[in-house]
Amino acid sequence: MPEYRASFDATVTFLNGGGLSAQGFRLDLPGSDASPDDVGALFVRHLGLLMVDRVDITNLEIIQEPHKGSRGVAASEAGERRLVELNHVLRDGITTYPGLPGPTIRPHLTREASQAAYAPGTEFQIDHISLVGNTGTYVDSPFHRYASGIDLAELPLERLADLPITVARLTGSDRRGIDVPALAALPVHGCAVLLHTGWDAHWDTPAYGDEAPFLTGAAARWLVDAGAALVGIDSVNIDDVSDTARPAHSTLLAAGVPVLEHLTGLEQLPASGARLHAAPLRIERFSTFPVRAYAVVAGASA
Image (tube, rainbow, N blue to C red; front, side, top):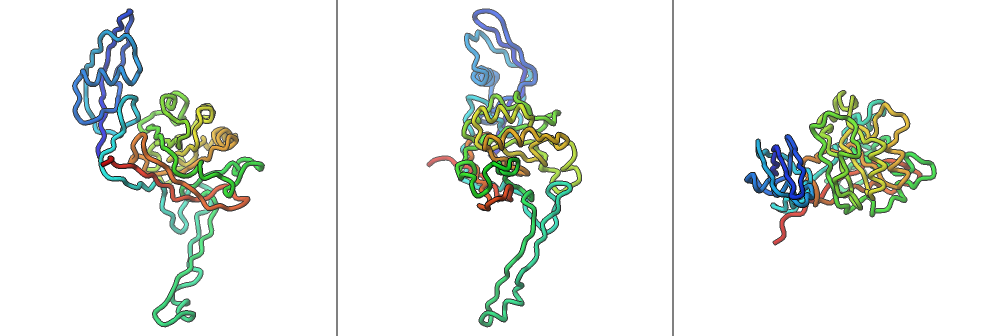
């Protein structure tokens, strides 16, 4: 179902003196229609303003755009329950991260060869895949960064499955680094925080590895302190690849927060209300492995 937001200028005056102004502010709307008075009330509620005397809304424009999670606007629940794929499809030789080999996929036993072992008309294929753990959409365990960290076999399901999702809408930003102010208004405690940058549009092209968005070390620390259960991004790396200290990985994985990289399809999710499933195979002494990440988006209740 389409979602709508308001773009507007606002001037607020307070009963005890003083004022506040905003230009080009954007705010989630519950529907496609809203009057200036409606938008003014939503603006006050979103900012939690007290002792407001008057709100003047000008240059109001209603646009079709995914919600970003404005306070006081309930997530859209219209439509049926649906499942949303958040992973890239793998194929033989595809490049995930520049410099790492792509997977090799081939039959181990072909259908034709299997016919000799089974009754007439019965055949099977058994396939073989060789890949590095950092292939496609994958989860990093703490063991990826720290020799003493828990590995894929030890990662608790509570950190990987049936997690409430908070989507951080960051498309259109002119900054590569995602810092604390871009996240500070979001509910993150116990959530899978998914950073929607739109960089997945460059997947499987040379541009995917160039000048990609990333999470700053300070923002990673804020997410840990705020209680995020998992952090994911639809970009080539959650860190700035030019920073060899890898502060986001280091901070998140030290705290036991799994990192989910190379997501896609985040534009299909509401800002909140969906639930994430992204569990890898349980492999001992292994750090990173592909997942079929998906979200469950609940429909309207009967």
